[in-house]
Amino acid sequence: MIDISYSPEVAAARDTGTPLVALESTIITHGMPFPQNVETARQVEETVRAAGAVPATIAVIGGRLHIGLTGDELDALGQATGVAKLSRADFAACIAAGGTGATTVAATMIAARLAGIAVFATGGIGGVHRGAESSFDISADLRELAQTPVTVVAAGAKAILDLPKTLEVLETFGVPVIAYGQDALPAFWSRDSGLPAPLRMDSAAAIARAHVMRGAMGIPGGQLVANPVPEADEIPKAEMDRIVEIALAEAAATHVSGKAVTPFLLDRIYHLTEGRSLEANIALVLNNARLAAEIAQHIAASGDISAR
Ligand code: PSU
Ligand code: MN
Image (cartoon, rainbow, N blue to C red):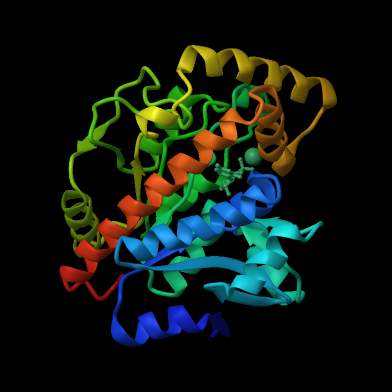
C-alpha cells in the first residue's frame, strides 16, 4: 500500500469524519504566476474552511504523496521551478523515483480516491483541444472522470478548448456534466458557452444525491459540475474568443506541444488580458471551493462511507 503523508489538519478531519475537499496543485505551479498562485491557494483553502469543510491540497514532494499541505509546503511549491506536471501516466513514476510534482485534475482525482475524498474543487478541467482531429490532443482528465468516483467542481472547460468536442467525449465516456443553477454550459472566464449543458442542478444537495446514487448503482466514474464564474468577474465570451484566437496562433507559431500547451496558453492569455483573466480565474476558483464544500457536507450527511 502506498504511504500517504496527511497534513495534521487533514489527519484530524479524517479522525473526526469532517468532510474534506481535494484541491489540485498544477493550478499553483503551472496555472498562475507567483505570488498570486500562493495567495490564491491560501484563499481557496480558507474558503473551504469557512464553508464548513477541510481543504486537502494534493502534491508529490520528495517522492511522497501529500494529502494536505502545510503553509510552508505550499509556499515552497508555489516558488519552486522545474516541478513536474503529473497526470495519470506519470503519477506513479514520479513517486517511485522520489520526485516532486504537481497534480493535474486527473492525478488529483486518483489521489482523492486513495484518500476517500469524494469532492474536488478546481478552476477548469482539461478537454479536447481545438484541432484535436489532427493533433489527437485530448486531456487525460476526461478519461479520469469516466473511471474515478470523484465529483469535480470546475467552471466548465477552458475556452481555449473545443467545447462541443469536449462535451461529445464526456458523453461517450458516460460522464454526467451538470451546470449549476443555469441551463447553459459555462465557459470558464465566461458564464455562457452558448451550448446547453446536458444536466442542470440547482442545489448542492441534488448534486450530492446524484453522486451517492451513482456509487450505489455501481457505475464507475465521477461527475463534472460546471459552476459559472460570478457575474461581476466574468469576461464576456466574444471578448475572450478574440484573445484565445491570438494565443492559439502564438502557440502554433512556437510549436509548443504536449503538456506544455495548456500552461503556455494560460500565460499568454494572462498577458493579453493584462491580468484580467487571472482575476476571473481566482474568483471562479473561490466560487467553486464554496460549492464543493457544500456538496462534501451533503455527501457526508448522507452517511455514504465509500467516499466522504
Ligand atoms: N485550470 C486552471 N489552470 C490550470 C489547469 C486547470 O485554471 O493550470 C490545469 C489542470 O491541472 C488540468 C490541466 O488538469 O490544466 C490540464 O492539462 P492538459 O490539458 O495538459 O491535460
Ligand atoms: Mn494535452
